[in-house]
Image 1 (spheres, rainbow, N blue to C red):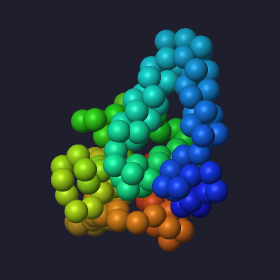
Image 2: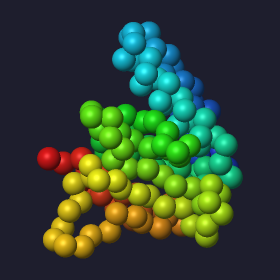
Image 3: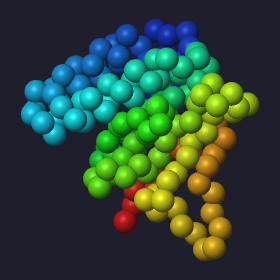
Image 4: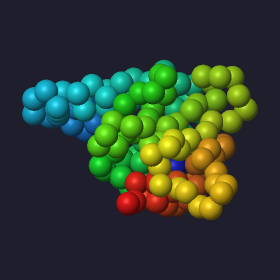
Length: 150
């Protein structure tokens, strides 16, 4: 996905994208109890993103699209009020920590213990996220795919 599209100024979701996500949440609720839980998680993530500053929101929206596209098996939900994505065991694999939440100079993409990023005795699990672009998207997608690989 491009960082910006013709229907938004902030590089965030277009009205059509928001409508499609809300429609998907409604479909999940209609599927029954499990679907309702997934829909509530998705809605909580979207609500969390909507409350962010414009800069954080634009990054969080792009992260959301990248994660849900690269790892459709992860379930969106909030974790300490932040957008996060859980595996089938309901364990958080990756989360987006926006800079405004803790008044830090950058947002970060953080991987938790279930992420399969192990590489020897030392490996990164948190990445500063300042600006979205094709190279960042490619790196995020690659990290998420490795994180959910078995």
